[in-house]
Image (cartoon, rainbow over all chains, first blue to last red; front, side, top):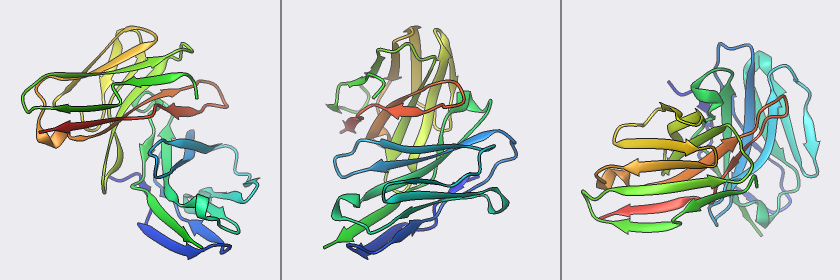
Length: 116
Length: 113
């Protein structure tokens, strides 16, 4: 069963628009970790953020912000004032304590295209 | 990040031939992983390791084996490559502790013809 769902397959926005990428996860563990990665057209996976299940504080890093809500099992990612360089595939991932050596279980990704 | 090197970066091989991909890390992290990335599937776990000679299967392990004889090296072997194993393969490490992070190598693009 899919543990991480990224319902948006592709999103296209115009530069300077705000965009939110959705991530819904499923777990029975009380201890788990959530991640976001960026994969630009060059192909590497760039770590963006990790959130622990016991820390529900939202986080802001420049134009990026993350909204973690345990009540809805969501960990959404917002880019404010998007730029062309934000064009990439974004992955959300879940890691459950003690499951498969803490391996990350990925969603299928959301492809974001930012046009000038 | 985390000194992860994958080799080779690109490989074309023929169906039925054995192939070994190497992941090398420089920071003695205990946990290492092999994933494959395919369109429409995201990244899927093939095998993982939690120490020297300690490995286990992931979601898509059929047709693959791994070995870890040293902390720094994690090898992925396709005993007899098939076209369905054409993919991009990523190695990853996981740091431990409350500030845990996971970093990926640059990937290996494997084409089986």
